[in-house]
Image 1 (spheres, rainbow, N blue to C red):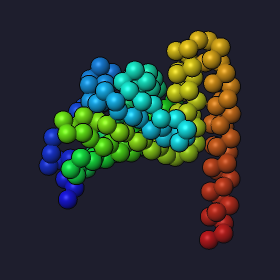
Image 2 (image 1 turned 135 degrees about the vertical axis):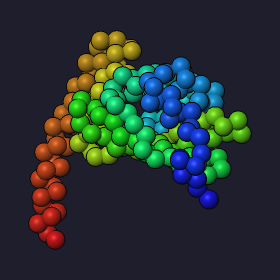
Image 3 (image 1 turned 120 degrees about the vertical axis):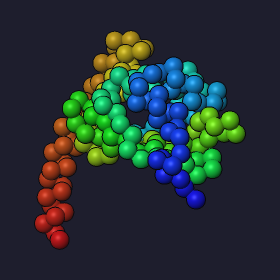
Length: 166
């Protein structure tokens, strides 16, 4: 049986992320934890060093992160949140698998809507690239920048086309 958040203590990850406290965020992960990217199945970040890099950029990119729902059932939990990326509303779900000590051993993240996901992808990729150097940041920015405008146009036209078929 799942327990709603108002009937249980808030998960440590939720508290740390809402505070933007990277050190506390890292403390919620097991040493050998994995973080699965919402952007591609080709990106799995393993261990605290890689998770620190990603979560540090996420904390910088996401504005007004607020968790709205939390469900916990045994060694699994789901957190539902909203945030803004460059002023645009993003919804996300974090699926957590916990170890025996309650530390996160696996975190899989999901985002929507797609046009804002593309904007988030650009901001996160550019932020991660900057850790490696200006050239890497520029390359990652160039690869991901067109996605935001393309998906925004596709979203408007595609939604209108789908609605016209109903």
